[in-house]
Image (cartoon, rainbow, N blue to C red; front, side):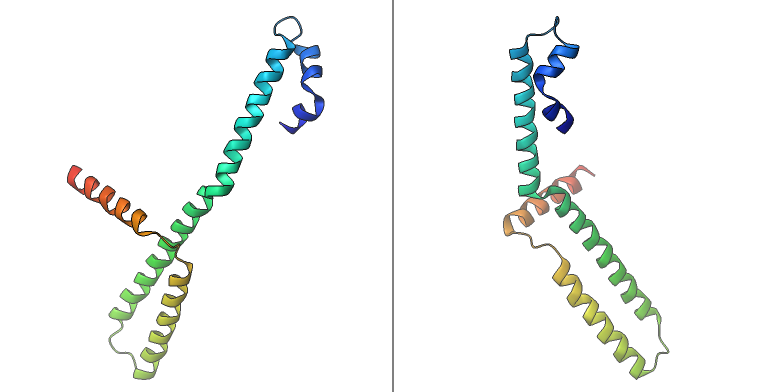
Length: 124
């Protein structure tokens, strides 16, 4: 895209599209394309869609690992008290770090997610 912008619409028209398309139409289409690209880029930056999805996925992974650790702790029956205290402290630290990493959700997002889950459950 940058190449076309620096090369110039008039040069592109002159080299490739001179007999097929009017220069004004090509310039208009090119400007509309640039505007749409700018709007999409602005929305992506503003809404941070990819970043939010990535944060949610990493949060799910961290919670899964935490639950696995809790299951492992439950299986360990013959553990000395000092070892279990250290394990509990480590799990508490991990829990606190998970809470810090989790993306904040508004109440309205939570209600929408709950409603969507309810609809999905009813379809089964």
